[in-house]
Length: 295
Length: 246
Image (cartoon, rainbow over all chains, first blue to last red; front, side, top):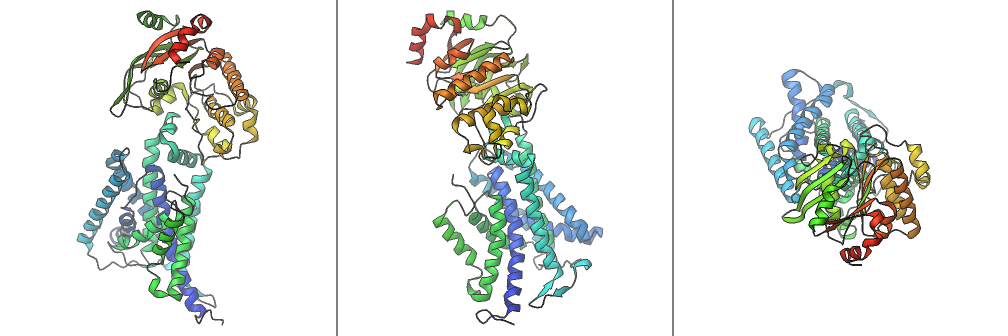
């Protein structure tokens, strides 16, 4: 087998796969953030907590109701999405005409409360959630071993991202959303219910976070801090892709996951900072992000 | 002024489709409309003339409900709308063409065209719209904001003709356009009037307004200060010049 700069293919492709999996979570989470920011102009700091809630709801469904992974993949995003709708109606809708900072502070506070409640109830040691039997094991590709569940995570994330992108770019609902992102008062003056659109969009963005949480549950321990650890990186991904850019979030999410994986192979010391270095460079060269449009 | 006010209230003879009474509006703490009064009869084309900052655009934004902080009375087809949000007002049958066209850059021409939902039966079909604006048909897949200024203006008007709205609020549709396009817009408005649309037109260009309107309301400092019938325009031209500072 060939070696690249002294690195065996097993190590290289193993790290690339890990990068791709991280990239899958970055993509789904940053997509939700981008949709929410695009329409609501709110930097949703509660996104990490909502991702964690998705994982916890999956765990609770199994623990208390005997409902397994596949149903959880459907039910948890809906339940967490509904909590998002309640948050939007109760709190965020009142912040429409004020500075972004208020939304950020509110969602940051909500994130702390949600994490605190789960930490108080379940501790921080993490709860196990098994891989569904259908996806147990893996296959030897010759140059690497590919666990089935990890392949499924990449596929599911890719499908979720493409489906969301298609809805936004190719449907009438998506056209309303894009138009409202540009000029919500005018869209309202055409007879379109923008407040409902905003509520549904926030709920959907939150549901996407919860979907990622369910996907993550069998890989990482279900833990109240799992979202807090990830969300800072996801914000960097959103900034690099361009705030509010849907396609930018997807492409950047997967790409940065891969870059992070490659960095782990060739310069592991920089693997936890490489995304932030890229963010600084992008902000210096193209402040609106790689796929963002300048204001 | 009292003479003007009485003429305002006495027009038109038939039941108005739109009646605006003592309309006051605010941008934040800034009081910008101080009691706008005017009526528009079904099928009429009425212009709001006035200098920059007189309150013409604000009047349209108040009627359609984009400007929420407003008091007074706005009655459309007998229904009071002053407390309604914009989306409900639009669904009564009022179409709004904003200043600077409001074409969405993230939408194609085709998407811009079908964005406003049909609110009433009787709107134009897409084929009728293409007959009226042939340029649009050729550019359907282009990005909305890649059209020329004139084409964007036509798209902006076209998209509300689909909806079935019978009152059109047009905010400076000729602003920044070449004379040949202005003529085309004028012909379009004349055609819409023929088809029975009622139009409130905000204009600074009173020469253009004179070619399409039945009556002109002069707005100054947030109030309607005079009404001039189009057939009396020549006799009142010096007065109008004075109002507009021409």
